[in-house]
Structures are given as structure tokens and as C-alpha cells.
Image 1 (tube, helix red, strand yellow):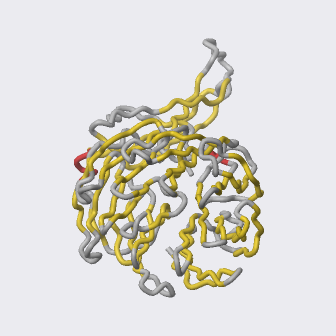
Image 2: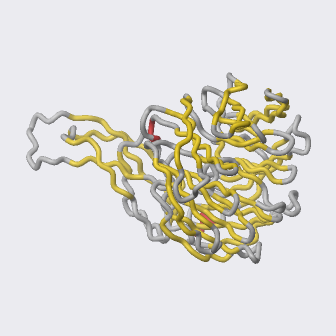
Length: 406
């Protein structure tokens, strides 16, 4: 997963002297496509269903599945018949990455804003509210192929980045290749659904918790249609995911897992952290055990990938209980005595966890890219880059129910 708000790459020449025979290289420069915030905010609408361009977060609520189309909006899927799911609507929400639902109200980020949709009548979805400029920073989604991002005259108080234009530029080869500078901006109970392990939104009782790269935000949901911003604070370094269990929030970051207590729901308190090597890091928890997948390579850190089992019986001192090597892991989920792991190109893997700290591989589904998973009471939802798969857990096997191609 890319960082929530990205870093600009720029070249720096450490020598003040340049020779006439300097070598020349071609780099890719990204320039933002900008629109005014007023135009950005007026573009939200419910549209007819269409194909999914880049599947992101997944959320299950009642007989419906919601799949985020990264930075574009939310696809609504009617899953009344799991053997034949149907794309029903697309909610256009520019800048959207995450969602959560409580009692027929859907909460979604839209770059700097938090939106509230009433989905009580799924055939008449309405935008009920917008909390403006609550998220100080958002994912600019700078193209990976860009060597340099030129923000030019971008004014984050008045404008929103909705895309990028790439151009090739020739420059002298630099002695020191790349430096990184941060881009600053100024700007479950029964009535909730269930998100995947890559989620950054969590509804707990009458609170909505969200995380970005390093901050946690707390909203009060006493009035479901009109959330109130309550608090924000530094939560950890490069936070990527958030999982709730037993009155604790577990944050997966690129260098560890943070534990926060919810004794004071409006002011989560830091308990401890477990540190690991640099990697992409979702986490799920059951009882006194946390399971964390570490994906190496690319922007995620070191090359090695693994599944870690962490003993959290003492919340103030989490310790490593076991580690299993994987190939390309993403999300994971718990289904009874089974741990379901999405291992990217290596497919879907199921581990027996009768002994929660000693896992054994009992089943594997190859030939599919597995990204995130939601285990439900009667089925298991698995997303990939181009399809949604549904399985029934049948003993030690996953029985395929349906495939919905995007």
C-alpha cells in the first residue's frame, strides 16, 4: 500500500561546480491537475453501475458489498444471492479511499472532507452531510513512475489535486540521486458492517476512528447524520491500517503495530507498540493473539515477506510468538479456527489455528491474485485486482460460490 500522503522526489546537486561535459538524463516530471474545492465538492453523485478501475477497500453490510474504486468512489454490489452478485450503483466520491457504515449511514472520505450518505433506501442513496477540511492531508496519489512532482502554484486551501500530467524532461545527472521532502498542506456492533484488514476507518459504538499517515481522528456519531469532529493526535509513523478488538485499536504501520486503549473513547490512549522491519503491514486480532502480514519489496521496505504471530496477552509488552515466510502478502482475516491470508500473486492461503500461536497450512487457492478478505458467518469475501470471489468454508477447504469480474 502506498503511503497515505506521499513524498515529493527531487534531485539535489551537492557540488556547486558544473562541468561543460556533464552527462544528461531524462526524468519523468508529474504536474498536478487541479480543480477548485467548490467544483470538487459539487461532483458527488450516484451513477449507474460500471466496471471497477482499481479496487481498494472492501466493506460488507447487510446484503450488500461496497468496494472502493481508489480515488474515484464506491461501487455498491447486491449480494442477496452470493452465487450471483450484481453491480447495482456507483457512488462518485472523488478522492475516496475508505468507508465505514453504522445504522444505514455510510461514512466516506473525500480528500480533505468526510461525507455522510443515507443508504437506508438503497435505491435512493442520499448525501446527508459533509464535514469540510477535517483531514489536513490526503493521498495525492503521485504516479509511481514520476521522478519528480512539481506542485507549482497549488493552493491546498482552495484547490484539490484530481490527477497528474506526466512529461519527460532532460537534466544533468546528479551526484546524489534522490532526496525526500514531505509535501505540506494547510488544509462493531450489530448495526455496523465489517471491513477488511486494510481498513483505515473503524466505527466503535458511537465513535468513528480514522487514521492517515501519522494521525488518528475521532468523530462523535451520537447524531448519525451529523458527525462531530472531536479530536486528532499523532498516532505513529506511517500508519496504514486499523483493526478494532475488545476495546482496543490496533494500528498497522510500516515499522510495527501500535496498540491504543479506548477506556476514554474520545481520547484513545497509547498502550504500546511492537516493532518489525520496514514493510506494508495489516493486522487482525483474536483474543490474546495478533496476526500481522509483512509485505516487502517496492515501496514497502525489505524484500522478505512474512506472517507474524504476536502474543498480546500483556498489552503493554507484545512479543513475537512465531513467524512464517510468505511470498507477497496483503490482507488477512479470521474465520473460527482458520486464518485466511491473501498472499497476492501466490493466491489465497488458509491456516489452522486451533493452537492460535502454532499455525499449519491446510488449504491453498492458486491462480488468483488475493488482496483483501472479509470472513462472514456464512461466507468469505476475497478481492483481487480484477475480481470479487466468494467462498464457503467447508471443513479444511474453501468452496467457491461465485466470481464477479470487475
